[in-house]
Length: 274
Image (cartoon, rainbow, N blue to C red; front, side, top):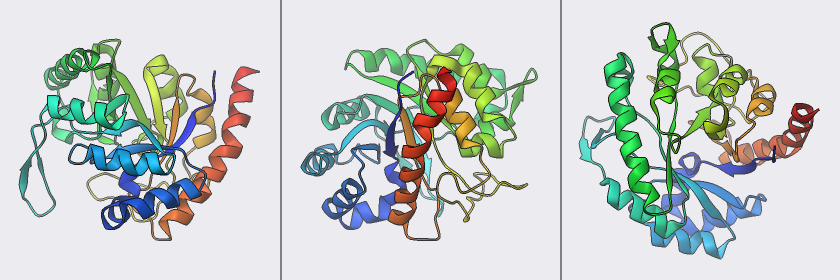
């Protein structure tokens, strides 16, 4: 059981990246990070790679849509998404090893037929990715675990239908918000889990992706049982910092999360190995 690398999902600093790519990369490196999880990378992989290379950063995982052809923005605008081939080519350029679909809508998790269709599509993507030396995966929110199919969380039914090459990234905040024991979930999903999102905040009724919460906090400062979950993530290669929203200084929040993870990961892994 090796210690996961500490990473940060660049959605967290998306506005800063758009305003100043070089400066943001330098700030992240200055916090002691050398690994990031790419966001919105298909439109500018070469530019991102140049900035990351200049500051000693590497994006081994990245988020890009694999299960959808279009996306609707908050203002109702519908935009076309890159093709699978465009996404895989961009991942190869940037050096991403695992391309992870970050989101599908809740309505697609309500029936076994719909879940099976998504699994089939991700399995096909895994076949295409292998030709590029890449792997694919899926990242959950709360609705994939709230939805039940034959008495089981839809995400677990989905996992059973996936090709062994397909990986999962478990968001510990959203799993907990869905009322799931995150450590037990990780144990059941086993070696398929390549990464976790070590996200934290107060837990209360009504937390949902339908309205993103505004009170997330640095890792270890909220109600998510992160230490127990990290101890159960036996195959995870990455522990990824992320804020969907943060009221304080984002870089201070990232620094606090990194410090907590750097202290906690060796402790929980030693406990898991004992």
